[in-house]
Length: 151
Image (cartoon, rainbow, N blue to C red; front, side):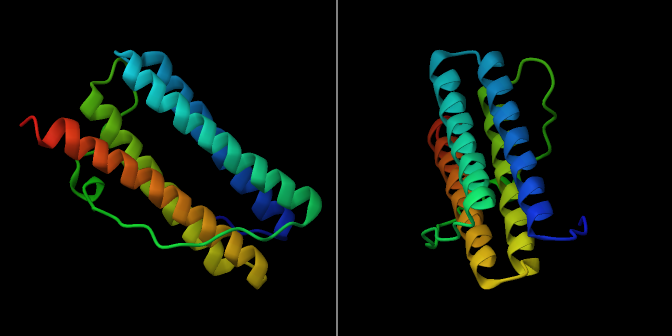
């Protein structure tokens, strides 16, 4: 894990990761085989944009209050094989890739929360981790509904 010199560096890093997520979901939307898939990925890109906006606001205004809650984890993504984001993905492959990415984002924010220099920032990162966990759950439910039940 990268070492950060101050809170500003942590926030900039987190904002950069959110932008990568926006780019990832935008690309998946472009490559989507169906309008339904495209819509799902555009929605997730929008949610990642909101995360980046929150981090930007926190960085600019020092606003550290965010709601926290527990989110269920079906752990479906934990048992999937790795899928590379290249070429045209099947719906199943896109869901697996999205689950893995959301799990990685959850781990990132959990680690950043553990290393946060103060309680307020720790709560921000814990809240973002829970949001990423919620995203993963949405992909897992989608996978369960449209992939596992069809097989």
